Amino acid sequence: MASGHKGFLPLAWTAATALSALGWWFGSGLQPQWWLTWLAPLPVLWLASRARALWVALAALLAYAIGGLNQWLYMHQVIRLPLSVIVCATVLPGVALALCALLFRGLLLRGRVLAAVLVVPSAWVTVEYIGSLLSPHGTFGNISYTQMDNLPIVQVAAIAGIWGIGFLLWLLPTAIAALLATQATKRERILVAIITVLPIAAAVAYGTWRLQVPGETSVRIGLVSLEKPIRPALEDADGQALQARYVKTVEHLAGAGAKVVLMPETSFSSQSATVPAFAALAAQHGVTLGIGIDARSDPQAERNTLAVYRPGEAAPITYSKHHLIPGLERQYTPGNHYTLLDGAPRVGLAVCKDMDFHDIGQAYAARRVQLLLVPAWDFGVDGWLHSRMAIMRGVESGFAIARVARSGRLTLSDDRGRVVAESSSEDHDETLVGDLFLRDTSTLYGRWGDWWAWLCLVGAAGCVALYFLRRRAIS
Image (cartoon, rainbow, N blue to C red):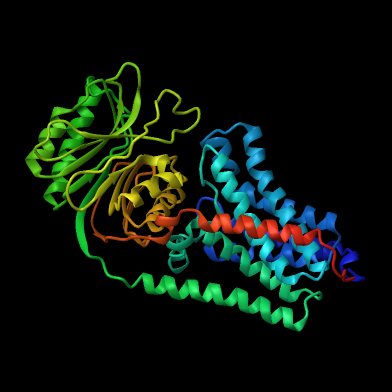
């Protein structure tokens, strides 16, 4: 890099690419180190103003793609995605980063330093938002989920959703890269520092304050996952044997004070609209009992259902899963309604993959739900990530979540994203009981939805327009 941005130094290029790749490898994926996510883009963005456009784009593409290979075994061996899908899932984010890096570089070299700092976070949020609208997997893979152990920052979701968190994650490294660029003047460096430090400091302060707000009431909840057999018919001997085991476990949890007990997604299949043994169990112990059922009572529409039995009610209250896994759940008819239980607290129902999508959270936010019951079925190694995606919906839309997964995590989380109790059912039977605090919470995101994503779209478009308006070029 002997002549400013026109040169090229193989060692620096290799080091920047490798450092960013390592940052993405450990700062993303199934169990990320949240602090590394803030630093992962920095080496490539630092390179942007010091190398030719082709080398900058290549570094960004390789760094993100190599880092994304941390999920190769998960995508290839666990969920068995086609190779073409794996390649797209690995390469396309790298292409997006390459375009962001080129925009950052171009605006810097045109003397538009502030626009250069804003274009990367705005463009990335825009790409992720559009992707969430088009993808059958919703928000899976969104960068914001890397921060689920960083609770003060997670509170930003209550205002701006995951889009606000993603914006901050990209703002910091982009600003540092701009501050280190020779193209920035002293005045521009001061301005960049201000527009970066103030929102991040405000986010941390807001998040810290929000985590101090006490709960209003509590409910004792039991979760239970019995690993095998898998989805037996209740009418068969295996189904009857598993039912007996669940009855015994529910009695134990009720004896421990649980007022709500939840079982995993499709724990049974059944051709009956009701299960008398579970109705009797709910009545006998005074518990609200939720069971995941592969419901086949309607010959025209098999459904992935959550059936909830309440004391004194013979027929269950039901909810059918809205968002089905492509291919794996092609036999099911998706649901189209939202379900609340009568009385207080206000309790809503959802199933597993529903929590990957914003529409479920926003629908229940509009209904002022305080607690969401979510049976699930994970793939073992993705238990942490998938449970945290669900927990994020609670922060965004203002409700606590009781989630129980076969081959995953059992979690009780409040509307701030705090996991108050957790255990794993990745390869064995598991139970959990704990007290979950509930609040009557209304969030800005729950009322306004994806307003920040739209603002980022407008901001990205404005920055791109500035990219094509000529200004001084800096050599």
